[in-house]
Structure formats: structure tokens, C-alpha cells
Length: 121
Length: 107
Image (cartoon, rainbow over all chains, first blue to last red; front, side, top):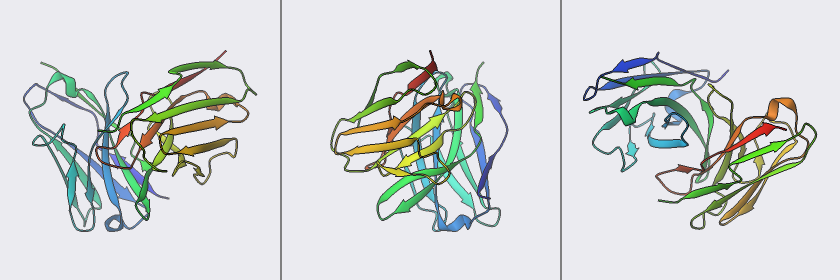
């Protein structure tokens, strides 16, 4: 079955960087776009960006431009999200989500289990 | 950015009730509207995509409607497992944005 498995929880100090991984199985990794979404405690979901797992093209939310980098390793069927210059407001659960498309319509049909990133001095 | 606003923010209902959640976009998004269910400590789960299409495996008690700026999610007969938080999301343009959520609680 289609599955996304993320890396474990992280605790980081302000100013540090974090990498969260998302390993895909059960489908052709390079045939889909992977998105990253985060959720701060008690807050709504917030879209961060996407990567075309086939050609590596990316698009980021302006809010995170310059701090976020999304990459992929095709042999490992894994997407990565790097976030730098961490601050306390980045404390959140980070999700990867596979996008399904029909023409230009798109939706997130499969989600990873989430990775808690805590930023604290 | 397109703003998504849900109403109500919370709702108390009983098993068997029919409930409707509304989502309004700050500009027209055609049918680029998806609905997700999230339970505490879990990832969101897709319920409805493209405004009115039911995701495979989701009970037919869930339905979606609307286009343009106004959308609704309806649960025709609440089951115990339906008590959760529901989010709408627009996929019309980046940054993709979500509503603030509607928490559905047991009365």
C-alpha cells in the first residue's frame, strides 16, 4: 500500500538547522509531487513547498523562501525538507504529503505520520 | 494569498445528527477545494477533493459541494468516529492555504 514514513522527532537550538526525511513506498516515487506542510501547536495547517520527485523542480512559500530547501533522493525514494535559522516559532509537527492530480486540480491523498520539531534553548 | 475561512470554528452535535461546515475563500477558486479530517496526534486524512469528489474508502455519509468562493462539507449522519477537526484547503494557487479548522465535538 502507498505509505510515507517520516524521520523521528528532533530538538534543536535557535539558529540551528533541521532535516526531516520522508520515505515513500508502494508507488512510483518519481511519478508524483511531494509537498511539505507544518502545524504549530493549536494552529492551522501551513503549506511550505513542493518538489517534483521526477525532475527535482521545487516551489516554496514566500514565507519560508531562503530558509527552506526541499530535495529528493530517487534511489532511496525519499524526500527531504531542510529548514535553517530555526526560531521558537518553528516548533511544529512537519508533514510530507503526496499530491494527486487530475489536470490542474490537485489534492493531498497520502500523508506521512508527522515529525515533531522542537526549537528551544 | 488566498484566505480560507471556516464556520463554525467549533460545533457540538450528537450521533446521528446531520452537520454542515462552511468554507469561504477570499477570491474565486473554482473547484480547487479539498476537505480533510484530522484527529488528535494524527496526520490529516483526505475526505473530499475537487469540491465534491469522495475519496476512495471514505463513507458516503460525507459529501461536499460548492464552487467559486463558497463551499460546504456535510456529514449526513454522525458516527462516533467522525468527531474530529475538519479543514478545508485551496489548491488553486500557491501558497496553498487551509482554513482554521472546525472542531466537531460530542454533545
